[in-house]
Length: 142
Image (cartoon, rainbow, N blue to C red):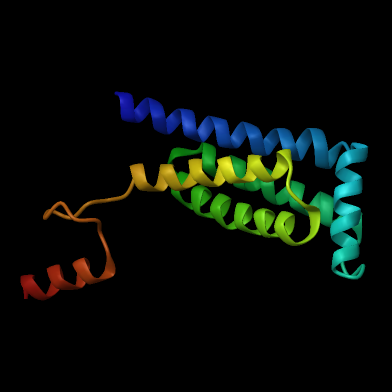
């Protein structure tokens, strides 16, 4: 029961955080969000216009949040959160600088990694499931 509660809590915290950022910051176009994405657009020499950058990331975050909320797609959502947070962390390191959003990205990444670790499948030998374990099982059966 405790592990199940923790998994639901992780999914809710991460999804609410992503939806908050997408809906209230990116889609609403608050000045701080516009300034941040203008800076990102300038970093790529204007190849991606600020509105496309901002709204595109909002759509992606909304999609990832919905995937992470649904139990059947939560592991995929967690992987996408990790991928997205890696990109955000790198953008803060190389372009935007450190601050609240940097720390937020680190926390979300740690929560997604925790979710994946808590939900990993185990083989009948009580080892993490891997390609090598699966291949060894198939060879052993034959």
